[in-house]
Length: 587
Image (cartoon, rainbow, N blue to C red; front, side):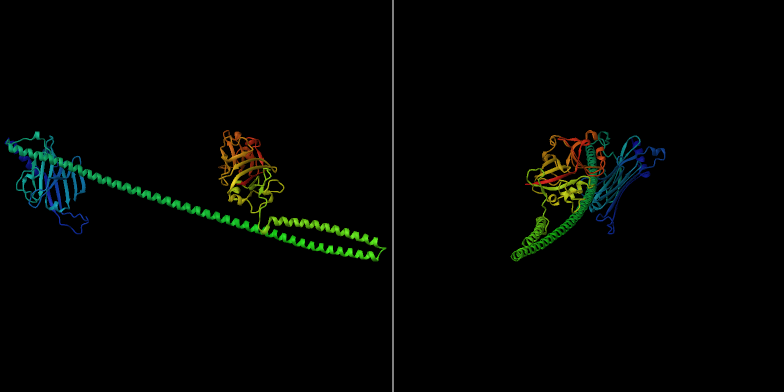
């Protein structure tokens, strides 16, 4: 047995001489120029274990480092402990590197098979002046045997009972003590008790329990530190995600705001241009109307002057006739024998005067009729429309106001003309304001006042004309409508087509089919299911030269097609209208 202890002692001395287990505590004075900010390092603790590099057979049987742990305990001014040992840092084979800052301590550490090191920088005064530290290295040899090496440094503890598993008296400040001890967490069943006395057994059992408690505490501290580090990392990640989302949201809001401002500016500019264009057009129309009224009022004055002149001539002729009669009477007394001859001459002259008087009277009546017409039409010099209202349904009441006339084949698109008056001159022919073909018409007609001031409309008449006669009509409910919404299937009150409200529609609107090269306005269509061969409906105003064969054979636009019978028809067999009209009846 003594020989075994001697060999163990020789082996321990060899490890101490050939290896290197070093624990140092180096105090530092605060540096005012330090870049650490409020954290000033007051001491640095370093624990380093270096094993032989295994270059010979004997070294190959030495141990390897599996963990290196630094613990600490705080001591009051009387040398008594004020708490329990707590683990400050640890590197293991499972966690061979360490780099963190927490609770005023910066920790760095590394671990390999033959070397382990831990460095702790303290910034709290109590850690630098009133604490004791231990460094515990755990080894395992090639046979799987585990051994422990510990060292103490720092302020001395008044009682050795509080030393971290090292029974050694005479521990003083800044003195490192090193010894080999059992494993960090020993198995009590494997402990060899040399002293069989009860106090020795109790003391060793107490130390073993203390080591168990310290081990559990160190594991708990490691877990807490790991959780803190993970929590800090998670908080940092959440902040980054939140900042990124906030930046993206700000960018998106800014882009949308710029787009909204641009849209508002564009709408404002377009509205201003439209209002300016409308105002200029209205001023031009007003000027032309004033000029026309002035010209016709001047013509009325001229006719009145001519009438006055004719009346003066008539008065002169009348006085001449009276003079002649007086002369005849005087001659009747003095010239008896020549009375018959003189009377014959007088009769001839009177006949001539009567004939001239009749001519003057006819001319006077004609002039008076023209003056009356001009005055009734342009009373006071202002234009007063007298032909806006018609009786298109022959009810004896001129209660329908003409709002629009679409004229076929004038090469002016009908939808812009209806909506805005596009392509319609300021003064259209009088024939465009009626449908009896007594006067020529080559333009559309838009009653701007009626369409732009759409209100109080009771019913709307959509009439189709051919050869000056109404051939088809549809009456719509105009109550609560606008000048574009009245043309709808759900507003039909009466129609020349008996199936207009019973058959389905895929188009029934003023805008109609507006797609690609196809523009079919005021479009009342049934379906496209069978292509051009089965393409059928009731009315369309074609504005293009493309589409089905029946739409390509025209030389001019717009072309107005309608179903000639009492029901829908194929467009290939539809009739062609000369014009269509829109009339309003008010409430």
